[in-house]
Structures are given as structure tokens and as C-alpha cells.
Amino acid sequence: MTILVTGATGSVGRLVVDELVAAGVPVRALTVDPARASLPPEAEVVVGSLAKPSTLPVALKGVSAVYLAPMARTVRRFCELASEAGVERVVALSGSSVGDGHEGSSGNEYAAVEAAVRDAGFAWTFLRPGAFMNNTLDWADMVRAGEVAMAYGDATQTPIDLGDIAAVAGRVLLSDGHVGATHVLSGPEAISLRGQVATLESVLGKEIRFRELTRAEQRAQWVGFGVPEAAVDWLLDGFEETLRHPQAPTGVVEELLGRPGTTYASWVAARQDVFA
Image 1: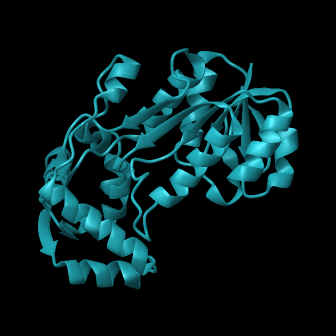
Image 2: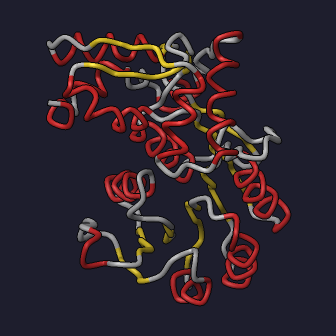
């Protein structure tokens, strides 16, 4: 049973490769640059990308299951080629924003991926994580300078470690009972942006102030960084929504893995060199 991991050098896909290799199953990793991929020797590496469907037939040959990274633009063609190759099982990375119709929402792309996979008739499972802990790596320069400036400091989310997403993907690919399931994934705790900064301060053992920006200040900053305006408005609307309705952990990671999910403090402790 060979499992193809698409986006095998992406933030989640690379970790899925490790999970499957550790489980001792045949893994084929799809990447555009094998020389720079640093993939484990146990994985069979194939050159290609979801963005270039012409590279997929070779990658799909003899594959029974696929971990599918989200690529809405070519997902319909992927499904056609995977069906022709005899793929039976698809575990697709999606997101908790599915169903959010905002113009700038990532949910639009995730919904397109889910619809294509479902329509193609695979034995499917969708993984819908929310905010990533890794998002706060963007704060590294501010953390080093001793002050994090963000709007909506009390916005409360349930950020998840990428390693927990990959562990769930591996478990779902290798066990029964998940066909037709949509797993909404979260971290184990609800924590505000201000709370994340306090955790960084505690774990790193240095003073880090939190400075509240206005919505207008945050918007201007992100637009200045080149983020599309519709996406900026969607992100800010999302923070504002969690002021009114703080997110709560779903408990799905713990249920599926039989262990606690990774806390934000543990995640920071493992990355002290990034913030130091």
C-alpha cells in the first residue's frame, strides 16, 4: 500500500512524510526539488507538483491512498488523474474556514478542494484545522525587540501545532473508521493574542510588552506588506468575531491520537532559538 504525500516539503506535508515513514509504510513524496527537500531516505521521492498536473500520472502510479495538500486551481484535474490511476483513499487538508463566504476567506479554496474530492467518489476524509501556532513565527522580530504590536489583543483562538495535524493525518490514513468524516482540529487550549505574548515572555524569560493597534493601523500595516485587502479584512473580521465568541478546543486531536495536544507553551519551548 503506497501512500502519496503531495506538498511533501510543505509545512504540514513534510511532517506527514515523517509520520508515515515512522509507521513503516511505503511512502512516495511529491516535490519540485528533491535535492533541497531533505526527505528521509525511506521515502520514494518523485519530482512534480499539484500545480503541474502533467507531473502527476507518474507520481500516482501504484498508489492506493493520497494525502492531498489544498490546491483549488488544479484539484479537479488531480481527481481525474487519481481516479484513472486507481486511487481509492484521499485524506485532504482543508480548514475550519470552510463555509465562510467572505471574499477574502481561505474557506473558498478549501471548499473547492472538498467538493472536488467528494464528487470524484473517493473514500475521503477532510481535516479542518484552525489557526496555526506557526503563524506567530511572524512575530519573531517583534519578540526579539521586546514588543509585539497587534490589533484585537483579546481575540481568543485555539491555535494548533503543525505536528499534531500531521499526526492526525497519519493516523487517519492508516486506520479504519474515518471514511466520510470531517475532523475539525484545534489546539488544546483557548488563548488570546495577548495571552500568547505572555506565554512567550514566560517561556523565553524576557520582558515582552504587548501594544494594542487599532484596526486601521493593523490594516494599513498588512496591506503595506502586500497582503490583499480582501484577505486583510477577512483576517481582522475573524479576530473581531473571536472577541464576541471566543473559540473553544474541539478535543478531536486528543480523541484521535490518545494523547494531549501540544500546548502553546510547549511549542514555544521547542522554538526558543527562533525567538532568541
